[in-house]
Length: 265
Image (cartoon, rainbow, N blue to C red; front, side, top):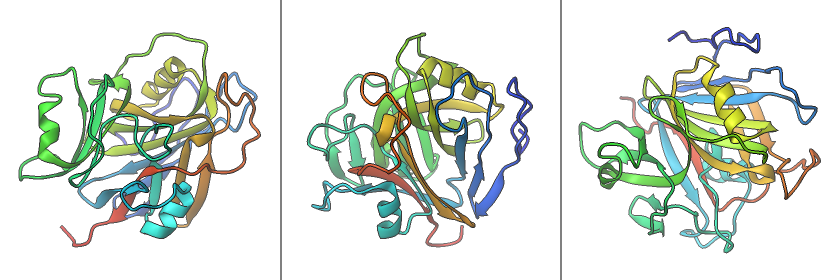
């Protein structure tokens, strides 16, 4: 696959920019029928062979939730995104979440997408998104130290699982591509998830699977690497915050961050 966005129906070509070893960034602006926000898809592409994924979790550290920007500062993350939606206690992930043996949420629900990283034995991918209804989808997560379960957007191999609907929101998502890389994705401009998936799959990114990690004003992405310093926040969400007025990141109990490898491979 080319290291550039393919020419798409939106007329976009944008090459990836290397921020650090193993981290690339692109921010295409696509044509949309919306006057809300900027129409940009902020995209961070991560090579798990060259960087390390890690959780930031307020629950296990007996601390209050904090913004993605604050998580980056505290944990020295180059990048941070929502780990997933959270319960009313503002600490517990809605789906299963295991952080190196510490269970933030010990129960799986019916969500069909699982991100696992930090293999507990040799010979496994360093990070992977499982489809729970696929072959060996659930059993394999026991082989990983870090696991989070979320609502599925795209099923392998690159198939949207959302039906057309009316509700739309700013979106934060995590995806994997055909080369085993992980992508953090953020769009302040709201879409229905059917629209978001359709547009994403037409960008030529090689997306195989994707999960929803948050929508509306709580959707967040912070990038502080390679000269890019942005702290992005969502705003619009049907039935909750139907405007583009939110200008701040909301506190998050759980994030996934990106760190340089401690040792060169």
